[in-house]
Image (cartoon, rainbow, N blue to C red; front, side):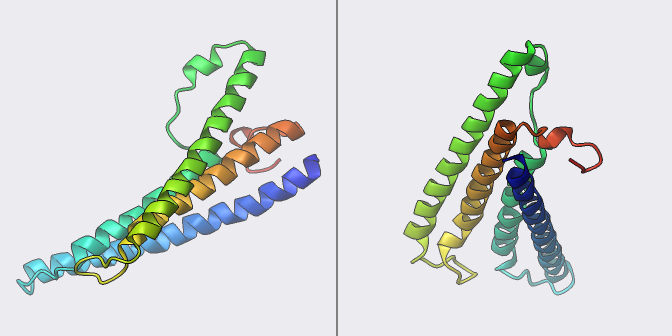
Length: 172
């Protein structure tokens, strides 16, 4: 089982890198959009109306998927001082409960985000002309990735593999 889970971790590591790469591309798009807004406002004296809305949409596509990768790589905000003070068996149990809660949270984000995206897809975003449901797509992506990465953490625990945050030099 540990070999299969290790193989899954390698695949999910590639997925996490792809998410970071795509978020980087969205960040570049955000920079270009914001640059166009500043140029339009101060050089042309005619602010393009669509740029603010597009920038807000780009921020969602940057922040939410990267937050899910943060769950996997454990670079998200966490209060571990209390957990670290617990005895080892209790600490292990708390870790499982936390991963189960993250799994549930990801599933809820996925389900509700999908419902919101579906409900709003028929309406157009003013100034952009894209479906309003687009603003909920990053929530769906984040929820799905969060659930997937939390499930990976649980599988690693079940297989006796070290948590991803304790790998040394990226090696298992």
